[in-house]
Image (tube, rainbow, N blue to C red):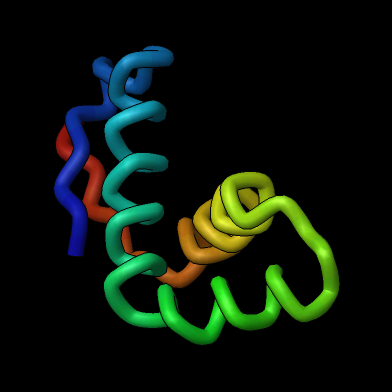
Length: 65
């Protein structure tokens, strides 16, 4: 679970969440994503960014008001 302060959802917090998601995806699926990107001639960084955005929907958030 990710605990967020409801009053602090600015761009910096969103960027931290995205970076955390990227690290999570790269740790879990890094080798297979690299192989897929190389096989299909896709930019790895762009693909990682898209997967990280999708991964954000899998987290459970708790908002403190």
